[in-house]
Amino acid sequence: MINYLTALYVFALIMIIRFILYGYKYFYLKKVISKQHIYVKGLSDNPPQNEIESSNKAGAWVHENLMEIKRIVLKTGVSDYIHTYMEPVGYGAVQQKSMSAIDNILYKNIDILKESRDILLRAKGYYKVEALKCINPIYWIEFIVFLPREIIRYFSTKNDSKPTSVLTNIIQILYWLISIIFAYLNYVKGK
Image 1 (tube, rainbow, N blue to C red):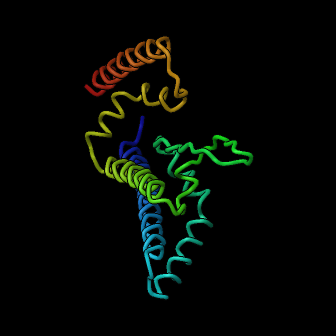
Image 2 (image 1 turned 120 degrees about the horizontal axis):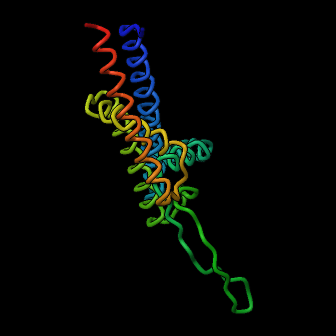
Image 3 (image 1 turned 135 degrees about the vertical axis):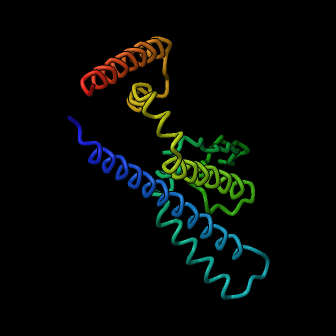
């Protein structure tokens, strides 16, 4: 028989770990946005020397951590903005090139800076919502009720097809039936 107190401790531990992981990523992206803001302030017309130094330090920090920033942002499912532009290659010819807003967080173009800031803000918002879900009992009830769907969603690819959806529903119904039978048997056993 399951020790309910142990199960409660394990559940609380999972909740705390999930909260810490998503909260860390939220505060990390908050720091990135702050560093990007400091960097942009140093790009203004005739900034004071201390803003230029702060801008250079912030830019170096962002550049140094760019791979981690990109990994954390793309893990949320937020799509990157891709800009295409024409680059002269000589003799009157041009070549089409493209650039990513996430890869160019420090690019000195106001449109790219705004788009990269937008991406960072949306990713930060995602981690905030996920961290707050950890303390929401409705989220955990829904998670337990639809556990098979969550497991299949975790292991499935982005290109879900109709058969996967049907399989998910069949497994979900079986899960509910087994849960009801298990609860009934435990109730009868307790009498």
